[in-house]
Length: 117
Image (cartoon, rainbow, N blue to C red; front, side, top):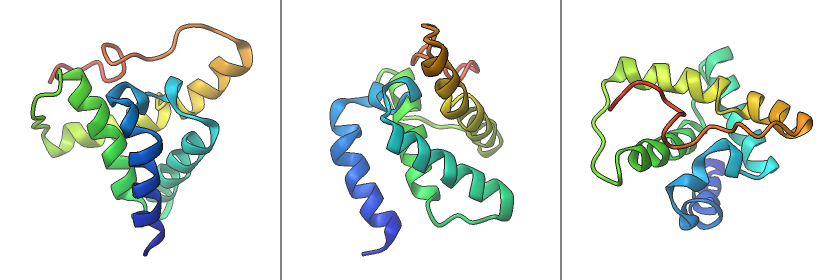
């Protein structure tokens, strides 16, 4: 089993099984925020897409939740914008600051990707 397959299986059991909102950065544990952040950073830094499927599962979980569980059809350029937003907002970075400063304004399904579906 590849690393991505292993992590996808774990992500489904540990995160997605708790619903789409579990993919929001505020609801992710430290380990998952670090794994997703590193996967996105590696993708942007050197094109390493070895864990890209995991990132897409997390993002599609959020997008599906924003769309009340209905099928999501997002243009590729918009999805790339969302990837950048998830990297920044994924609050993997912002969530770390929010937790350390105990600021209570996390992203929600309504606010995380501001562009309408």
